Image (cartoon, rainbow, N blue to C red; front, side, top):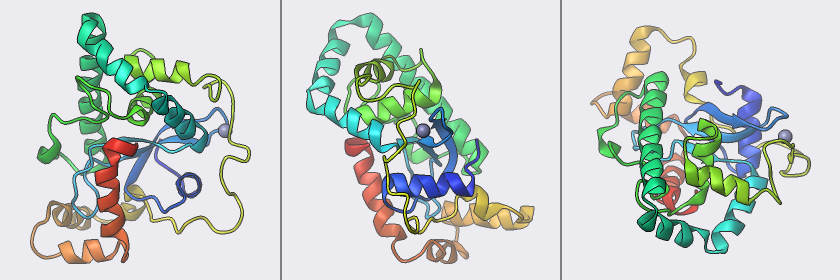
Length: 236
Ligand SMILES: [Zn+2]
């Protein structure tokens, strides 16, 4: 599931901006294009990133936005206060999210991220604050893990279903993709264990090489990352 160069190119086109710190493709269209970008729990510049599963496909994100506009989040949040069985399954989804994120961090080499320990995304475990997060999780985890994510997928069926490809014309395929930052995997390929450890140390903010690591991301990195972090719960 490690993203290829083509995956990163498509993701950048889908989102209209360069992607960074994408370590896996969480879910794919039946045609193979990415639906969900799986992001490391700590970005290369050291910032913790709780939103592991980022919904990238414009057709799905637009459909989920319509659902949010219909007031579905309020309705679901109210049901969580009255339906004990649903609340229990939703809490289990929260636990699954945290475990999955830890596993992603392990595979990506970022290790534990204590700043966001116990904090998932999207309003879990007791509220619904972002359906994009829940749908991203449901698509990555598969049916039966996130009950409200599964339900949201069912409720956008008039606009998107997993059985069909909706990619044609869904994003601009002409010209250059927004300059694609390389994924963590790509950037760490071919490095010696010592070099990898130095990179990890830089991510942890240890003295020495940290500045070079951040600088290598380019001038817009800190700005974009900050907006992603603050927007992650509200917009995706
Ligand atoms: Zn497709």
